[in-house]
Length: 222
Image 1 (cartoon, rainbow, N blue to C red):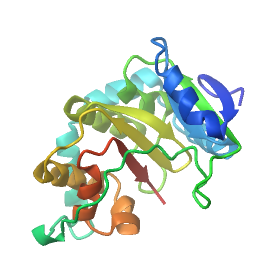
Image 2 (image 1 turned 180 degrees about the horizontal axis):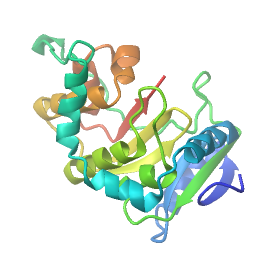
Image 3 (image 1 turned 45 degrees about the vertical axis):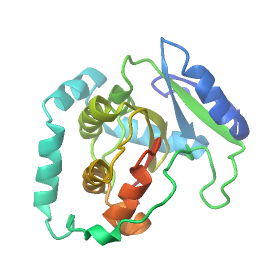
């Protein structure tokens, strides 16, 4: 772990959330839960692959208009990114409010050991650029994550809570409070991460129901 670009601390998985919340009080770093050692290794592989520096990625992100990005990405494959939904598909569900990146996906139990990165940035939306997150499979590139997170932060007050080998989780201060707002956000999230619908909620309306007053957003790329 010595080559990781920022300091890591290792904790018992059962204490990961408590430690994370304590670290959020610091002003010199922003904590991000990475998962276990395998997740850290996966992050390091991605970091090694991206040649652009943190300042360069921030600059590239500034050139991206997030709303235009959603439109262009959908236009690349309109059938795949079909967002047509019937209003009656809405269903009431409990909002998503729990961070899960520290848990074993099969058992739901806390992993024995979990690493938390102490990322030296001033804004949480900068974290994908610092950790060079993305670029595998259908996952957006680091500068795209950064631009989208900055856009969502301005609208909803997001912060990056976790980045594992294939999952990103965001905490949300100001989630959507109406079905209309939730459906608009769900459409953006589907274009950003189709797997959360195609291999998760099955419909955009079902995703929107979890976003209504939801305090945590979950993204997963197969």
